[in-house]
Length: 140
Image 1 (cartoon, one colour):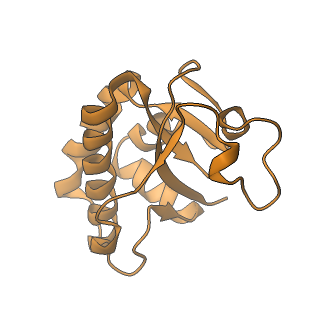
Image 2 (image 1 turned 90 degrees about the vertical axis):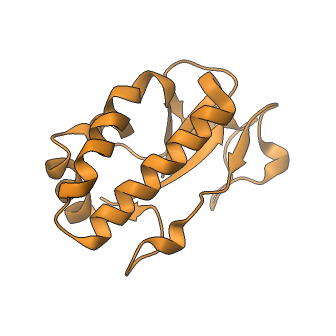
């Protein structure tokens, strides 16, 4: 399993849901196009990914997921809502996990993991600040 993370404005729904809930109809193979998004759903640009060394994306393979989760005492998997992909999770209810991630940054074992978690937390802070209860993390 691997995971790629992104951000969106999701003006409806509960605490979490499937990516398909963000589109009218079924998501076409290979992803949807913007015209298919439900009203009010906006995919957001992730900022500062280029500061992550080696792999400048908010993306982890299974080993990376395990390492980040271990070094954050389970906060990473709690934040992303488990191990399933193709979902969204609302961010405001997960602030406690964001704080646990933030606290773990100085003690992360590698420059990559420190940068990854720092970029993740900074983007979450900004998305929540700008969009409040509509802020969501996309898990691909």
